[in-house]
Image (cartoon, rainbow, N blue to C red; front, side):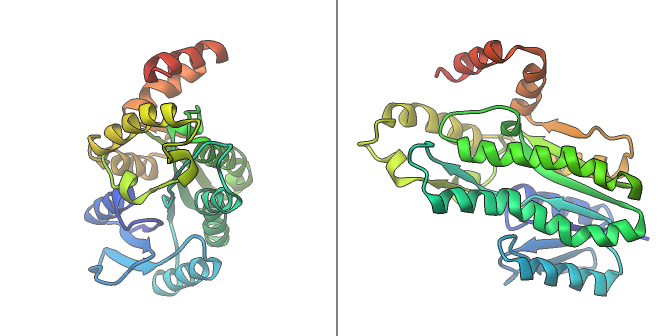
Length: 270
C-alpha cells in the first residue's frame, strides 16, 4: 500500500521538487500550498490548501487527508522564508512573522499529524532546516534563530515519539537555485536603505547570498534526501545536503567556536 505524505510549502522550490519527485516514485503526496488554483491533481499528487500561519487550515488539511486515505505516513515540514534584517532594525511584526512560519508552523502542523502517527505506531517527520541552523551569518539573525529552533524541536521531539515508532529528522539544506530570493526573502527597509549604518555590510554580503541562490544547483538532492530518510530506518538524525551544509556543518563540530567564527569571516570576507 502506498505511503501517504503531507508536504508544506510546495508552491515552488524545494517543496515543489520534492512533492513531484515522491509522487513519481509511487507515494501519495498531498502538496500543501496557499494557492491551489490552477494546480494539477493526479492519483499520486494532490494539491491541498494549507497555510501554516492559519491553524484551521492545517486542521482542515489533515482531516481531509485522514478522510481520504485513513492515514498520514510522512510529514515534511518545508514551508519557510528568510528575513533579511539587522537585529537593530527588525520590527516586532517581522520577528513574529519569521517565527510564525518557520517555527510555529512546524509545531502546529506536527501537532495535528502526531495523534494519527502515534495511534498507528508508525511515521516519519522530516523538517527542512538549513546549515544556518548550526551557524550564523550577518543580516540573517532572525532566520538563523528560527532554524536553530527547528533543530531544537527535532532534538526534543525524537524522545517524545520514540515509544511510538515515529522517527523525526532534519535536513540541513545548503543554498540551492530556487525562487528563495524572489519569493522567500523579505528585506527590512531600514536595513537595505542607502542611509543605513550597515550599508557597507549590506552591499557586500547580500550580493554574495543572492548569487549563491540565483546561480545555485537544482534542489533535487533535497528531494532525494527526503526519500532516503523515509525509506532508511537507520537514516541519520541530521542530514546536511548541499555544498555549504556539507562544508560548514562538519566544521562546526570539529572546530572551536573562535576558530569557526574566523573561518566564516574569511570565507565571506566579513
